[in-house]
Image 1 (cartoon, one colour):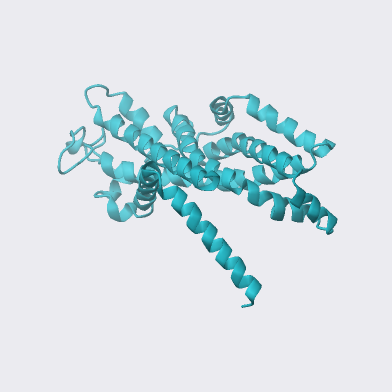
Image 2: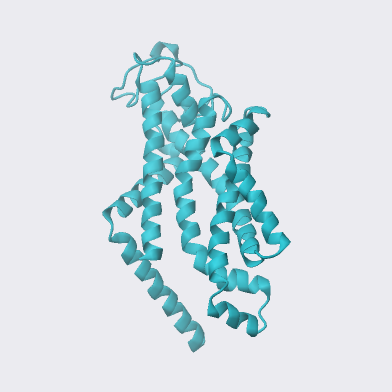
Length: 291
């Protein structure tokens, strides 16, 4: 390892320590990190953590239907006798999977289009990309997702594709604004003078300056994607029974309110738990990059 590489690694390590220090200064950021990690752990190890993993699929036990919360069933049981606590834990798995798939699809597309549009903002290519993005942004996200899902067979896959289709423009707009500003900096002009290609300038010089904002938005969007997905499932356009989707569980339990309140209340609280955790984590990441 040569001296130059060693110095670069030390500088990166120092920068990471600085960001971690800024992050952990806020107790709310640490709470968000703990809540987010606990959600991920529950989702990954659901088959081993859930007391009744078989209740996440096709299962009926009418002799235990509509049981209130107890030591045997912490969140009670639903109309089919399934343990609500076990299904809520498996609901974390589906919600995080949906967020991961959607953001994996939209973030690269949105960021790349934003870089291109911002770098070539005075040309037809850049203007065309942003015009298309603005058309999608003009329509409320939930309305657009509902419209797309209503034209297809209700399923988890179609819900993911619908949300993906309406989510990419927000990353394009964010990256476009940062690129439009950063491209006028002196280090970008210096890169052009040295003969660097446009792709090198966009991804090596400009993109690192947008990384903090993109990471912050990704973290904040996890909660929003889960909320949109739960909304689609609530109206029957998302995951279909017996998939333990949190939105579907809230919808199914709403028919039995207020007598059997636990069937819908605990899944609703689980949705709030996920959103709160990732929102606090996103605020912490924002402070770490902007502090």
